Each structure stands twice: as C-alpha cells, then as structure tokens.
Length: 317
Ligand code: CP
Image 1 (cartoon, rainbow, N blue to C red):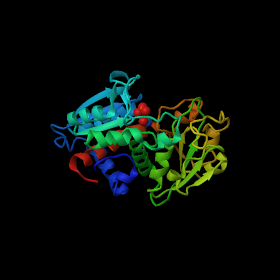
Image 2: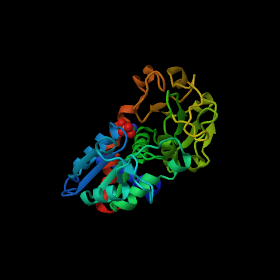
Image 3: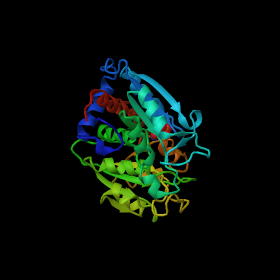
Image 4: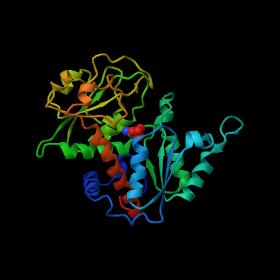
C-alpha cells in the first residue's frame, strides 16, 4: 500500500477487514517486520484514540515511533506556492515534509479542515502536498474530508457484531452539537459502507445532506424516526452543513439518540467514533447501556492501524 487516504487506496476491502481481525488475534505475530523502520505521527489537531492506537500499532510491528504535535511544537506552516513569506508562517511545507520524509519510513498526518472555504477543504491541499513532498508512504490520521482508519475500524466492528447471514441495516444518524464539526467521519463512513454488504440509510435534518461524492445514492431521510425503523446498527455523529458550508443550522432538538429512539430499531447496536458529547449527541443511558459499542470500536482502531502499517511495510495493497 503506497498511501492510505481513503477506501480507494484498498484493492480488496473484505480482505483488509479479515486481516484486521487476524491481527486482533495475534497482534505480535509480525514483530520483526518493522525492525529499524520509523513511523512519524504528525498532528495539527488534538487526538486521543488516533494518536495512541497508531503509536501502539507501530510498536506492535516493531517500529520506532515518533510523535510531533506540529501545530504547537513546530514552525507555522506555509502551504501556498510562490508566496512571499513575510507574514506569520515560518516554514514551507516543501521543506518541512521533505525533511520529515528523510527521518521516517511511513508518516501519519492529521489535519482537520478549516470549515471556511469548501473548495479549499475538499481539495485536500495540505494532505496532497504532504504526500508530494514527503516522498514516503503517508497514512491519513483524519484529513479535511475523510477519516479512513476510523472507518476501517467501524467496518470491522460491524462485521464482528452482525448476525451472520443477514444483511444489516446501518443508519448513519446526524446528532446535535454546540459547534461546527467537520464532515470527515460521516463522509468516510458513508464511503466505506458503500464497499460493504450492508443497507446504508443516512438520517439528517434538512440542510445537512452530505456531498453525493460520498453518499453515492444511499437513501437519505430527513425523518430520523423513519430511518431508525428496523435498524441493526446506528452510527451517531454530528457534522456541520456541507451546503451552507461549515455552518450550524439547528440546535437539533429531538435528534439525540435515546432509549426511546432505540425502541424503534431492531435492538440496534450503537456506534460513535468518540469523543462524544454525553447528553447532547447520545444519552447517558445509551452510552452506558448494553447496546453501546463505542469502547470496542475504539479498541479496533489499534488493529485497523496495524493492518494498514503492515501492508505498507510489506508493500501490499
Ligand atoms: N475517533 C478519533 O479519531 O478520536 P481522536 O480524535 O481522539 O483521535
């Protein structure tokens, strides 16, 4: 695998999911693969799960791992071509990424969208330039439009939990939040579910439809109760508006997933990528109840990252 930035970098998604599950059984089976190899994890935004799971994944494969919070510990990055750097930016991505690429065999990069200019965010300019100048395999640790390691872990979690022989109904349900949140997790989840043997339904208020680039004809309902009927999995996530880019259009009253909402489903398992706003996105009773998969989902982040790093070390897709 040269780079891992979306589901499109994976030749056989089902085989990758199986490999994640194998690694979960034997996480130290490939300890010598990463010997004398260095993984650099670069963060421009906060992280708990992605940082620790990917760091551990590298260590499970025998890699040396370096982590840098570039937003706080590095020089302010310039990304525009040909600009006179007489402002606040100190180092151009051309030099910064090239230097980091010399120190690392694989680089992970987390960079959220600014949510101000849709065209700029959806061009994935920073991630693409980083790939261009680092010249080593790059893993997205969440970019402006996608969170592929999260989506792989989500798909693994659904495979582990689904009733065999039944195509599960999976509902991606928008949830309330107090501030504008990127569309990345929702985009990516929709994109990965298109590659899986599931029925995907997306529920969101009017004005929150995701880009069709990611939903690709999935059923989109603006009535959450209708969407929840018969669901086997409910994936809860807030996102800001794509149409009115980056805006919060409603306080989302009535959209929090509660036990009353769950009663409409087929005793659905409940997923969330975390961090979650308790009592706002999801009720305490659901998060603390038997249907919540959020902790196991986060556990699977480790093995998802490990499978991707393993394939990069092996040079496989
Ligand atoms: N789900 C997820 O990516 O969590 P972090 O932001 O804590 O890494």
